[in-house]
Image 1 (cartoon, each protein chain N blue to C red):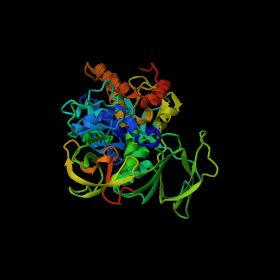
Image 2: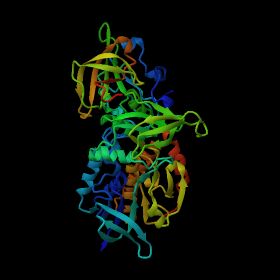
Image 3: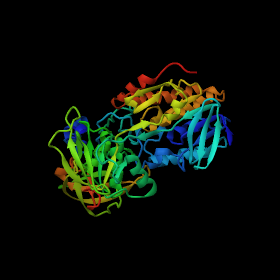
Image 4: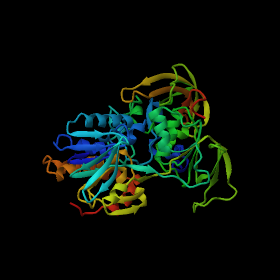
Length: 166
Length: 365
């Protein structure tokens, strides 16, 4: 249970979990925001209108996965750092994950990084494909990281060195 | 020395600044007293992006909100700011606030309306050795780290998984400090799930139903003895274990700094959901003393978005009471009240709603 452990189990994602068919069609945002809290900036973040307007500020966000193209603009708009983009079939062996990072020093494109799951366990090694700086949130970065396909719904953080993430 | 003002605002944090902002352009003579050498209050320590709605600057980092509000208020000719100035007492016979500036100069401050926005102070925890150097409140850790660039320690254990405990743990990790664990006495994480998820995926464990029993060390903290708690919050015998650390950070809640409100003889009530003694108030943040308004944590411990809304309401209400306001004032007040109600509506707001039900009154004016 997320409220006891501080991380969610994959089945707690419920409708926020894309179908295999949706994964086939390319990158998609996963909103790992499953607790009702008074927060709504994501509803204005998507230029395609894929994040539906809130009825109340305490709503959890709802995404229209047919409208979402996985651009990742919403990632840096989320104060909770709870939005990730997963491109499951990035190539034959790998998936691509876009995740928010607020830790210095940022990795560089091409770096090998340790991959962490929601519990902070190191589950593999991945490669940084791109470092994205956004106007919305210039102090942090959206990191594009290539991961083994079986880890697409596991990896949610990367570790550049042992300095931070012990 | 004597100073006269129309509206006195005590505290230059998010609530006080928003109150002042409501009074811009009214022609009223506004004075802000701030204990610190700068305006902004707790906002200045907040390096994370704020939650809430864009009207309360969601998505902007806390210290930047502090800068925005400070600039707005300082640019106004009708607002005077006295920094490093403590409002140390209210003298009812003559109806003035005694203020001490830079520990040197005393002022008698006369006012027509006062908005008390003094904030809250951190609670502590009772355990053996809790006076050892190396044991901090979370606010002190944030002040050292985020305002003065001083690392409070190398190897930290955090007590409390409310939003402050979670956020400060995250900020410590960002600063390169090792956070060993977060301990939580309750059976579940206290703060927002998303804050917990951020520190968990960085490998920081959260132990629920666990607390500190003793702090150990010769001249400074060297280790803590931690212990499991049962469902009645009692120590579970035999579960004690010793963990080394050089810093213990206590994030165990806040209580309103309501001393001045007692001196104003506002009707007070102890409300645990709001952190301690708070003044009864009506919907426009006016207490049972007709000239005294409250806003921010002193009116019930919450977070900065609520403080900003309450400050806004209190400022407009004071202006209205002094007949210096646009016709639309009621509308503006209602809008902020609506925002505040909306924020409190969800499950997270339940505790606050219960607390507010005990202090909200219809009286006053």
